Length: 575
Image (cartoon, rainbow, N blue to C red; front, side):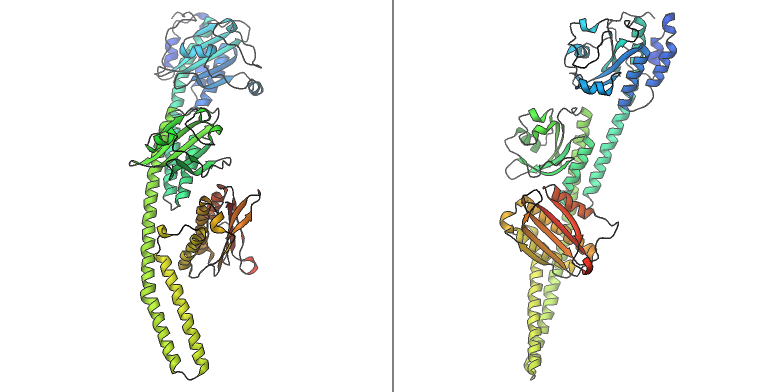
């Protein structure tokens, strides 16, 4: 087989056959000089074909190609999905320190690298600086003169280009170099194809595992806020994004942030996207929105936009019902989301929405069972306990009238009064049991009392309570809602684990937080058995996470029992 000119535009082998076949076709009819280098080429092909990690494979191809052509520098530019520019650039021969000084990697939008994207063919230059398509090098870039560029095809499609520069002996790349590198590029295409298939399979596996984790967590009985936090956290991890954010429709027609997962505090909880944003109408219609750069997109009308670049906004939609939106933003300058990532993320959002609906239905069933049980208890208290206490009181009053001993009359009278108080307390408990969640008044003080009264039934006693400061007027709705959830969690933990005889609840709206801001503090103290060493602390972690999402904190310490027995849980947040 004769060697075509280096600038020939003939197509390369497409890499669709198994490794080795493309090389066998390319090595027929070699010149004696080229035949001497066949062992080196075969060893290079063996090296390229090992391993399945894509980036490791690209690194190995660069290193192997440089050794094969005796080049000082080698690189692979991966063409972006839209065919405009490079999505990745892997290089060999330039040290980390030099690369840091150079700064940003080539993007392929201009210059010689950009020309090879639109005209993928073998290109050999004796001095690349004289080529009219060259746009020069950035500061601190090492000098480069000789150049050899070869396209890499994967299953007939252009994957990218392999670049070699600066032959070590100072000579130009010759025809033998071109032939060897083209054969290597054909084998590299097969190796890259295998690595891409492996990476795609691993990626699908991660997203499937993430969907299973979300479904399991949502069906384990967490409340709605915790369920959304799980979705945000898993989406952030799977999408390799800077944050995971869940938004739900608000009363004004926009969308409100209700759950955030981020390595850095964002203060985004409660932030809204106004209804006039075009994104909102698309999302509420069930359409996913993909943004290349949030900072420059006028549709993203939030304070967070300046921090992020590529963003996926995915409707949490199931059975035609849009529950909210899942946002996975990446940092500015980060790589855009690929088509495969977008598809997998849409599937994940649909699965998460279905799991949310199933979890909501499960919680409805559980609440219904609780309400039915509460109705039964209320009926029993009214029909049996109160009637018996009332009959006992009448018997005591009759005995009081018959008695002629003044001390006995006084004692029986006190017993009757105590029975009347007991009957009133039981009637209050019956009212609390029969009161549904929709009937709860909006005042924070009243909601706290309602939670305490509801907890009194399973506890078997009434927790004490105390309010400090203007609780109803200064505490905002978002903080108040989270305080009630924290109180419910603390009372539930006390009932299940503390075995306490006394619980004291304090809500203090006159607290100054460590950062100097004003806030509200919830304290729930008991005289129970305390927290066992090595015991589960998921409830306490939930309290802390809920407080930190608002800019507050939560901790626990000794209780009110003898020698500090029991537990005191403190939860605080700004207004």
